[in-house]
Length: 535
Image (cartoon, rainbow, N blue to C red; front, side, top):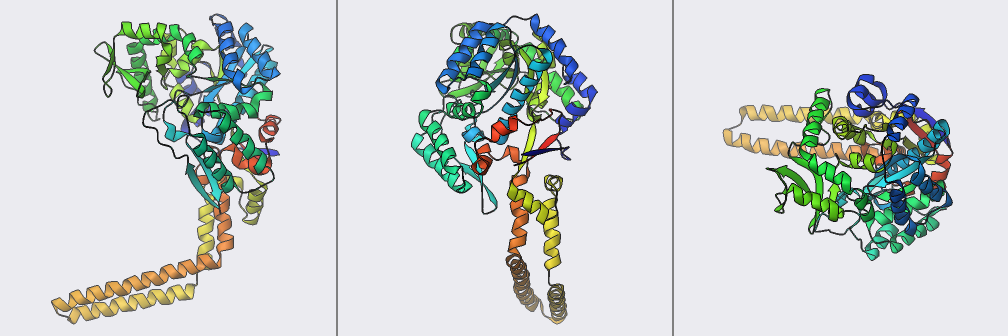
C-alpha cells in the first residue's frame, strides 16, 4: 500500500474556504483547525459539566451486544473519568454505506491518537450513528461494477411510514438474497467467500438497518477501540432531557439566529445548505406514522400534515417523561452532541461543514462554543488493474479525477474515423439535398410536399449510415475504448468521487479484510489534501 497526496481541482467550495480562507473561519467558526486551538478548546471544556459516568454506561450498554474490545473498554472508562472526545458520524448504510463512512471513522481514530500524544490527555474516538434519520432511500442501496459499468442495486422493500433507520426492520430473507447478489456482481476473488459469510452473519444476527451497520463497522474497528452510539438509542435520549428542554424553550430564538446566519452564508457566495425557516422548531416528533418535523406557530409546536399540536408546557413534559419521542434535525444534532459529549473536535465532510457554519450564533446563545472542526480524510483507491490501465492509457489519477478520460476517449475515437468514407457520405448527402432543392424549385405545391416527405426518408437513411459507421468503429476498437470506461467507472464512478459511491467491500473483495487496519497504519495528514491509495 502506497499513498500520494494531491489537491483536487474541483474541490468543494466550502471545504476550499475552510482550508484556505481565514476570514471564512473567523466569520463562521470559533476555532481554526490548527494545533494552537486544542489547548484553548480543552480549557473551555474544563469549565463545563457532563454526565460522564451515565454517558459511559449508555455506551457500554449499547455496544455490549456487538462486542467490546479491551481497547474500547479502556476508552469507555476514560470517558467516565476525564477523557475528551473526537467524534464523527454517518447514516447507517447497507454494507457500511459509501466509503466515506469508513474514511470518517479512520479520521476520528487517527486524530484521537494524534491528540492523545500531543496533549498528553485521554482522547477518546467516538462514532455517532444518525439512526434517527428516516430517509431510507439514502441508505438502502449498494453500487457494483459489472462488465465495466457501474450499477445501483437497491434493496427492494417498501416502507409505508417515515421510520427511523433504527426502527426500520428488514426482511432477513430479502436482505440475504440482496447481499448474495451484490457479491455475485463483485465477482469471485480470493476473499469473497469469507467476506460474504461475515456480512451474512451480520444480516442474520440483526434486524434493523442501524444495527446491521454497527455490526459491520464494529467488526472493522473493534480492536482499535472506536466507540459507537446510536442517536436514536433510548437511554441516550434520556440523558438528553435537560438539553431538549433548553432547545424547546429557546426554539424561536435559535431559529432566528440560524436563519440570520444562513443569510450571511449565502451573501458570502455560498448556497443555503439547510434552507432554514423562521418558524422551524428544529425538532422532530416520533409519531405512530413515523418521524415528523415540528414547526413553531402561534405559540404551538405543530406538524400540519398530521394535525399534531403541542403547547410548550406539553413539549417540556415530553422531554422530561418521554424524551425518546423527540428527535433532532440537522441544526440541533450538532448542539445536542456537544452538550452530551465533551467534544474536542468534530470530524465531518464538506456538506457537514456547510451546515455547521450556520450554527455559531446558536451555540453562543446556549453559552457554549463550537468544537474544532476537522475535515475528514478523503481517499481514492487505485487497484492494480486501474494502475495498469493508467499506464496503458498514459493518464494520471489527477487526469481521471479532473474528468479528462472521456475527452481522451473521444479524441482517440475521432482518430479512428474513416475520413474518406465520412467525406464521401457528407458530399453525397449535400448533392442529394441540392438535387431535391432543384426539383422543388420547378415542382407544384402538391409535389413539393411529396418531395419533402421523400427527402426526409433519405435523410433518415443517411443518419442510419452514420450511426452504423459509428457502431462499427466502437465494435472494431471495443477493447481499447472499454479500458477508458473501466478506468473512469472505478476511479470516478457516476462522475463523482469513488468514496461517495462504492462500499469498502467492493475493494476488500480483492484486497482483503485487512484494508482498514492497513490504512490505519499509514501516515496520513489531515490537511485537506486528497489521498491516492495504491492497493
